[in-house]
Image 1: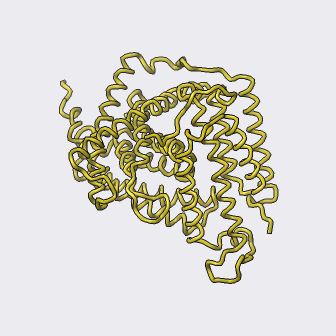
Image 2: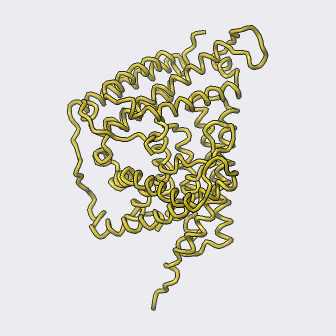
Image 3: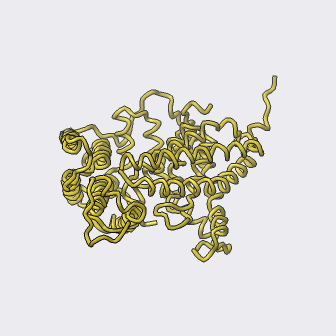
Length: 184
Length: 274
C-alpha cells in the first residue's frame, strides 16, 4: 500500500507540504549556531513519513523545504533541502512497521520509530548536509559539521518528543481500520 | 503573515513567460551560481539578475521584509565562517597576505576577505532569481506547465494543492494560536524552553490533526470526481510555450554552459587573483 502513489498520497503530499511550509517560521531557537533551532516541522515530516510512507515523506521533505526556503528566505539552500528528503524517505521506509493508522503504535513501534529517526537524522544532518555544503558551497568543514551536528541534535529532540506524541495521539483516534474484521 | 513572498498579477514579458521556462531558468541559474566560485562569472550573474529583477517590475514592498531577513542571515553566516575558519581563504587560494600585521589565528587576510566576498555574491546572485520566480509565476499555471514537460500530473497536482493550501494552513495556525493564547499559554520568549515546546505542541496538535481530516475530505472529494481515472489530464490554466519562452530557454542554457566552461577551464572552480 505504501509503494503506490494514489489519490490519498497526492493529497497528503500537497497538504503535508503546505503544513511543512507554514511551520517553517515556527521555530524554537537553540543557541548561537546560525540557522539552527528546534524545528517542529521536522517532527511533522517524521510523522507524515511514518504514516504515508517513503514517497510522501521524501516529496514533502523536498518540496516543503525548497518552497519554504524560497517563500520565507528568498533563497534555496539546496545542501539542506536534500537531507530533509533523505530523512523523509528513511523514516517512511518502515511505515508499515509502525502501524500508526491501525492503532498499533505501541512501545515496540515507538522504539523502532525513534531508532529509525535517530539513524535517519544522523545520515541526513551529520553526513549528507555537511558533505553537500562542502561540495556545493566550499564552506569550512568544521563550521558545517558543527551546524550539521546542532541540526541533528535539535531534530532528534523535537522528533522524540513531538513526533512520538503525534504518532501516539493519532494512533489512538485513528484506530478504525483494525476494529473491523473481514467475514469469511 | 505578510512576510511571505507571493505571486502578484502584472503585465511584463517576464510574467507572460511560461512557468516551466522560469523554473528552468531558476534551476540552471542556482546550479550555476552554486558550482561557480569564479568571481568574474558571479559578478556578471549578479548584474544580470538585478537587470531581470528590474524588468519584472517587482516593488520593494513585495520583497522588502524578506530581503532584510536574508541580509541578517547572510551577515551571521559570514561571521560564522570567519569564527570557525579564519584561514579558509588562505587554504583555498594557497597564499596568505595579512591586512593589518600579524595578530595570530584571527589575522584578517586578503584571501579570507576575498573568499567571504565570493560567498556573499553567490548568495546575492540567487536572491533576485528566486524573488522573480515567485512573484511572477502564477501557481496554477506553474502546476499545469510542469505536467507539460513530462512530470507526472500527480506531482503537479500535489504542488498545486500545496500552493493552494499554504495560506489556509497559515490562517488556521493563527486562529489556533490566538485561541490557545486566550486560554493563557505563553508564546513569547519569556517562557522557558520546556514551556515553549509544550505551548507549541498545544498549537501543532489541533493543526496537524485537523489537517489529517482535511486530507481525508479532499481525497474523498477527488475520488468521487474521478481523479486519476485517465493517464492524461487537461489543465484550465495551461499555456503552450511561445517564441519568447524558447528564446529565454536557449539563452539560459547557453549562458550556463559558457559560465561553467569559464569557471572550470583552468581545473579549479575558484578564480585566483593572488
